[in-house]
Each structure stands twice: as structure tokens, then as C-alpha cells.
Image (cartoon, rainbow, N blue to C red):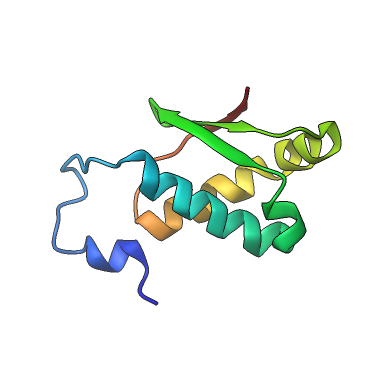
Length: 93
């Protein structure tokens, strides 16, 4: 599978690329599954994406704490997939 940044190589980095919620949610779920496995990926539900922030729901305080501790690493992986800094923060609802 090709990384999204490889598909965007024809675009200039300074050019603003419009991302929809589905793209960010897909990458979020992919990275979460890589980090926490199938069980962990079922514990988080991305709700919406706005202003470089993804809002996530979870019914478990323990899983929220784990994601909070790993948020920097997850943000870096999502941005690496895209090839630029589209995500800056993960917040909980």
C-alpha cells in the first residue's frame, strides 16, 4: 500500500491540501491499530476533525489515559503518512 504522502508528491508542500474527516479518521484508526492492536482500536471512536484537532470518544478512562500518553507519537505517525503537519492535537469528548 502506498503512503498518502507519495500520492501528494506532485503538490507543493506550501499549497494547502483539503482533508476531509474520512481521511483523518482512516489514518487515525490505522495508526491506533498499529499501536494498540485490534482490542485497542475498538476502544476509540473518532468523532470529528477541525482546526488540526481530532476529537475522539472512548468509554474507558484507562484507554483515554493510554492514548493521552501516546498522543505525540500517534500525531507524528499520522503526519508522516500524509507528508505534512495536518494534525496537531488529539482531544477527548
